[in-house]
Image (tube, rainbow, N blue to C red; front, side, top):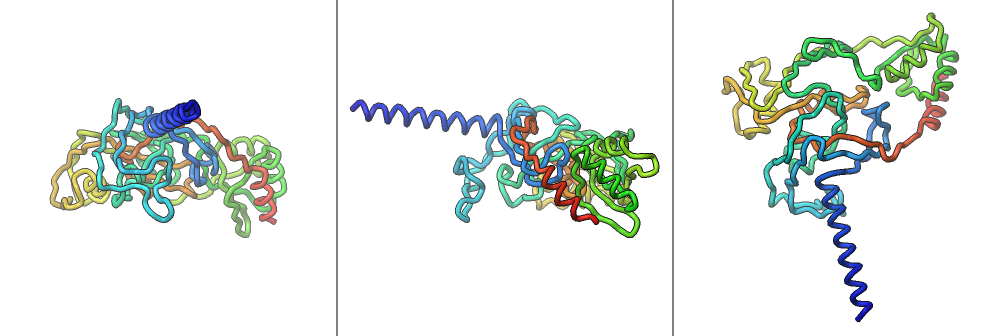
Length: 317
């Protein structure tokens, strides 16, 4: 009899602990493993970060019929059912701050429930109501040219004749070059602005690393905010078509609308590593509905710098 009571006590304790962990994961904190290099050098592939789900308010669960503590697919089958779904609700909602690194759902996977779409991590560079302009490698926020994050990865070049000197300096600083390429005269690598600053400090003026020619990409955007009304034209309809369909339904013929009032706040995100990025350049505007939380703490760091250096250094001769 006493043994039965002990088993019941431990069973209850286990269930209560499981419930507490489940509530913390759903409403407060989630661990996320960085699976790509798009946020290097701020976050490396393999890093594990804690995402604060309270930073912008708690997004309430949408898909209720799901198996907890599992991936979206289990043994080749979905671990959830979309038969019962709640609408989007957020408690104690707050706006995202510029430069925050946020975890969000892919807004383009409209065939899936909102909270079961793919996850991405990127940096918020513009908030609702902002205007942005990208011209080549320059970024303008509300008409003012902004200074890029020191972690922003860009392509830099140096002469092949100075290869040994440059590599010696890079290795002495324990920096790993990325995406090494070369042509008849130059060697190219993706490096952060801060890394290039450190390298150039140790190099003679005649062999400084230089920024490669930027792609001639240019666009102007107004970031929608909740309650904002804009006049629609043939020029801006392609920009806002996706989010209008998301808000009011895919059956709406946007070309027939003269104006539109947005229901939610939107954001524009850009990853630090433009060479390996899935961000607003491919996904478009990120709705407040899509945002899960703020990446706050790196609790496990994947440090592969040494092995990566040895591999890349030996590949350029």
